[in-house]
Length: 395
Ligand SMILES: Cc1cc2nc3c(=O)[nH]c(=O)nc-3n(C[C@H](O)[C@H](O)[C@H](O)COP(=O)(O)OP(=O)(O)OC[C@H]3O[C@@H](n4cnc5c(N)ncnc54)[C@H](O)[C@@H]3O)c2cc1C
Image 1 (cartoon, rainbow, N blue to C red):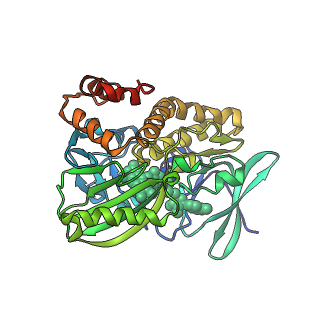
Image 2: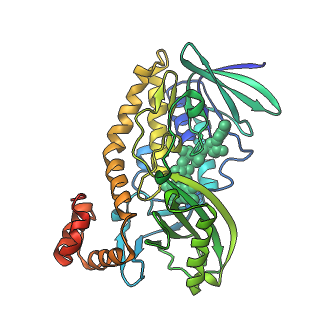
Image 3: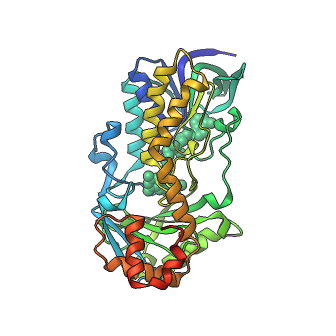
């Protein structure tokens, strides 16, 4: 078997993998990224919404070619659609600011990694890992029909939601049904949609999740749905929910899907173990998606940066103890927030449409400067004190 040697092997050239490679290479490490698809960034499996706020942290300059729409804020609709909570981009969190063209975005991030000196192989899936003496020491990669051995001191698994690398390495990232949202999205053309807002619909239209409309420029948008797996009997139901929603809205019904994507997001707290001897998990592979919004791009990029930098620190001693610094950084950044959002998600998924209507009625009329869970609860307490019992544990 042909054999290659690197300091760091990154599996997956999504945003998390490219950022990990970029920052590891910047520190002088010899880095290889392997990507199973023949082309980076396609097919797109994403609603493509991001905020502007985190781009500086990972040194990404916004570029016109990967921005399809600029978004001023978000609108959240009550189940009966009578009440609309309007949020500015600042209030709305990590998914509101731009609607990307991810095909170009992912390619740009990969090229940033290459500019720092990382090597990149496309159409080259990792098919197993190499593990010796309790350490991950590389992977077997299929390249042009041939299996080759890629030896590395550190492997960064950035292979997305379905991550096999974590499993091969013995890291448990198995999800409970309630912590997975099954998604389907149409890219629709010839529709009418308010362009400078992203739109979110909650309640029984999307049990345990929500429906989104993210505008992609004139008369086009990503129209999608995520539904919690524990709320459905089979995944086919997800499409039925989305189709029923579109059918009910003449501005969408007149349109046509020009692309369909399916996928899944995790909605769990930060896992306890995302490092082991010789390996770190980043992005979706590490289950770093926000449990309420299902957004994971920012977290993939930031965790990728952390992993790349810590790989440089631990390259002479890639033990679990050294790599724990990555686990600690990730926990410091997201553990509290994801635990709280996971809890709120669980709670929201139990509320009836009637309660959600009342909730939205109250908060859409309140002047809630900074939309915190506490702010919402205080407003509800004032208007519908009888409802607050349902939220007591959240308070
Ligand atoms: C329907 C849907 C809508 C979403 N909308 C949003 C949104 O609006 N905003 C947001 O922030 N997030 C959104 N997300 C989540 C977002 O897409 C992910 O969080 C993000 O892509 C994670 O980046 P990543 O690099 O960790 O993984 P990915 O982007 O999934 O990249 C993983 C890469 O690894 C490659 N790979 C996998 N296995 C192997 C292997 N064995 N060998 C080599 N390569 C491999 C894959 O081909 C892929 O290129 C959405 C997700 C879904 C499913």
